[in-house]
Amino acid sequence: FAWRYSRRSPGKKHSIRSSTQARLHSSLKRFYGFLARGRRVEIDPTLKLDPPKKPPRFPKTLSEFDVEALLAQPDPGTALGLRDRAMLEVLYASGLRVSELVRLKLAEVSFDMGVVRIFGKGSKERLVPLGEEALAWLARYLKEGQPALLRKRASDYVFVTGRGAPMTRQAFWHLIKKRAGQALPGKSLSPHTLRHAFATHLLNHGADLRVVQMLLGHADISTTQIYTHVARERLKALHQKHHPRG
Image (tube, rainbow, N blue to C red):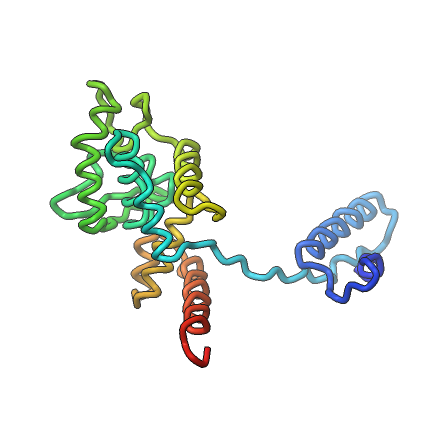
């Protein structure tokens, strides 16, 4: 590490980035492991070398204004636009994983109860409410959009492609990339951005962390807690922007 630090560009005062430290640490471990296996060294000094601490990576999310712009982008006057609007609405209303969204079946939707039944990681079942707005768009899609896409074919799945096949994660990735490029130019979105927004916005509005954990289907609450940092940073930014002494 000392050698690598000495090789930095002249005049630069910052330390080695944590990602570079992690790569160096891994390379040294492998190198001395190779030497030790070949009995070329008696002691492996990397055994006493603590791995560098990586800064926490917070999920990227969207403001509520940006979410509204994204949801409003698809044209509901077309079958594909109606499908896209319904998918985005359901995703933001429920916080489902993309894999759970594209695998959603008709039998797992209850309009009477206003929930979807999800089988998540480890085949764990959970009931997730959708809300009136998402339910309305979903009902409209199933009445007008899906029949046009299926063309008299049958499907157990809620969301289908233009050829009537079940949607895939890759197809949804192209969908959200296209819609985000049109609604939010310059902003980079991942397929899970709306899931992150769902959790962050719930916490911003005072939702209990345990409730958010249940809705997201997290086995460990520590996985959910990362969203409290995102929400806190967002609130700090809003305070600095709008408070007269921020």
